Length: 548
Image (tube, rainbow, N blue to C red):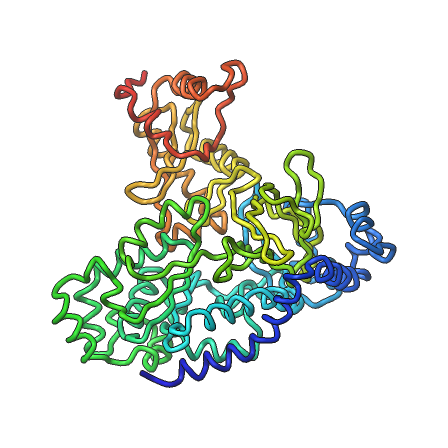
């Protein structure tokens, strides 16, 4: 075992200690921490175009802020963010925009979130306490290397019309600059793997590096289905991977410059390859903990739709601890997991957090949230988002000292989120309408619904011929791939293609199913997207369609 991971992780713990101390103090007095963050955001935005338009200079406290500044969605901010992307300075905050990160709007396809140094510092104010907690409560993690999922692979360098870079380098950018180099020294998979120009190559190179990492201690991914896909690729490519590991060659075509950069990060490990072949033969074991014997923890989403994908991960890593991630979005971080807490703790040292009561829209300060209550989250961040409706729902599960513990409950915009795709009804409706225009398929009924087997995907139930349903489904999938999150999940193999299913008398079948669920027949309107699972039992258990 190399001493480098142990040394780097020890320095990381020391570097994270101040952020952890600030967070620990804020857990006992979240109201004070939140007041300071709000005042900081107002000072940073006072002289911006947005701040002047909403009278930031006259705001003295939270009540003023709620009265003068409207709650907004990404689509509300689109004209302001377009100005940022165009290169205009001082639009949402006076701080320079370092880069813009892709995300998705509720009705549009690809959107960009501005990132400033202040916003990155706010992310660090949450990720550093989490990392401190991780390494101090699970010391075995400090003695080995980590796999931080590289997503997305092969994203070509891009800039906005105003020459602002698009996209962070990797997930290490969520941590402070001084610690990024240390974290990257503990990576089991070199960051240069992301230079691969297709997902299959990136996955092969990642597995090659992981098989050589006999001291692998931590796997951190977002969706658990990403890990299941990685495991399936290991099963399929086992013999080829062992051959490549034995000779120290990637075994896939790579541009010379990329191959040169990868050479040091993917050394030959003939001893490891021979050992794995001797122990397991022509196929890896079902229990992958036998391959990575020092793997101590997997960090991934465990709530909402992700919970359905956990069983496959537990089957492949039955003896490895799984820790659920907190709620972290492109726009900001809401909560972080802590050992010993029943749910992730609100990230009260990061952004100004408001919880919106879904019954009346009333904004509640984070420290005043009722135990057991379900709320929508609104963020005010150092990136220039003010009272931004994240559209995520959380429930207050209790408190750690005076700070709420929050569990993710789903989306307020009725989005479906099998693997991180954040597919909303408005986006589905737009995609179906665009697909109908593009194909000319006559489908008086067309509805997307999630299906979890044999892989997570959506089925398009369409009143059309079998050929028409298939053509329309392919076109809908193409349209949805223009949306950032959906395209990312598809490219990573976390989500299968939309599959078309022809349905006879679809309106009648849908209305009957809704009526059986207690809806009034006269109030039933088929949507473009049904988020609840189980619609295959409604439509596909019908007699074989005979379409005229």
